[in-house]
Length: 230
Image 1 (cartoon, rainbow, N blue to C red):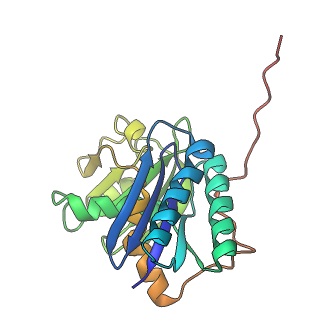
Image 2: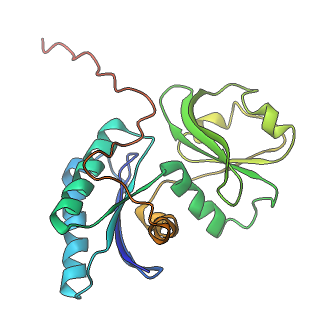
């Protein structure tokens, strides 16, 4: 097992966790965001200081790789890369949508055994970043940007239950009215929930090339036109 520092900045929530051997040693979360530029560095510094003061060597940095907020992912990536370079430790990239699935699998016994999991991240208006997973987190449908309409998921919902969650699912609840559609509220990606996914990747040796790693933006960044000052 390993001591891993986890960084999650894909949405308005910013969080950092330090874990070792399946135990969370430290967890810091800011839900007032987006404040990533101001809170991430102090969170990381506190986690690193905790590890150093307890003589616990960091074995890796786990980063939530997206999709999600372009700015949030950039801030998280640059911080993770800097720490990997300075400590000479590997980078582990965790798909954000899989991280969203972890609390559902751990804490929601009401989810039907045959249900598909559909984590959703808000991509503005009626568009979401979404994927479909089996309970084993085997991919049933790859991550994509979807404009959600009433019958978008009918090909799955006609066959079996689908559980929707994440900040993108909240705006879809009034649109998706199929009887097999289930919704779970208040599920956000958190660094502490990256732990089982990161530990598995570490055990399999699935790390990234720090120099060339880029987040999974899914869509190109489009800068908004600045508002006139006068």
